[in-house]
Image 1 (cartoon, rainbow, N blue to C red):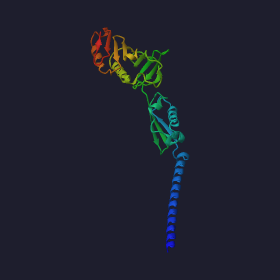
Image 2 (cartoon, rainbow, N blue to C red):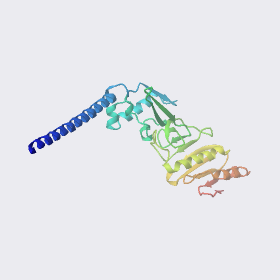
Image 3 (cartoon, helix red, strand yellow):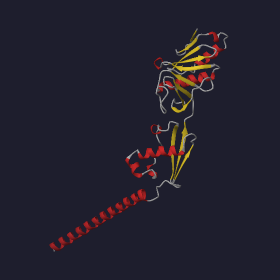
Length: 269
């Protein structure tokens, strides 16, 4: 009786182990098939293939240049993106950062939208808008560029004079290139405000110049009035009222200079 019970118990244990092994093997086969199927779906099937790429918002930048920029970003990015390839949806990013746009200085921003149903990609481009012209006078010959409100140099231009186009003649810096900033970051908003004050006033401008960046100032020569000094250390908005008040006086054209380099102060002679 004891031996019969022992054999029966051992038989139950054996059958239980067999069922466990069978379940483990079944689960392993299932997950292996799942991984194999997923791999085939991602790498071999056309389910994730990009069939159409549309570029919107571009004017000066060519469609091929935008697509080429994103392609380089994908193939030179992570190992996984490079492995998946340019034509795979999963390799495409949601957006392309500003650092990756440096090869196309005219390109301000780039958004990526995926449409899995239509297997298409929509690239929406925002190009930089011209704000003013920077001319590097120390370069021989001198070089001129368009820059935007962020102070980014993005396109070559020619030298200009007068009030029609805002222009800064830089006698201090040299060898700035497309994609670089016209000034250190903290000075750019203040320079933009100087241009806006000049634009809103009725001054007849001969030249706006940067002679020495270390002095943190901009000189403005007028045709029929004094030389005006602005500071790059603070915004120039408050100086507009001073300029307009002096313009209303008959003696403005006889002044030698108007010094606005101290915040909330004006000195003239």
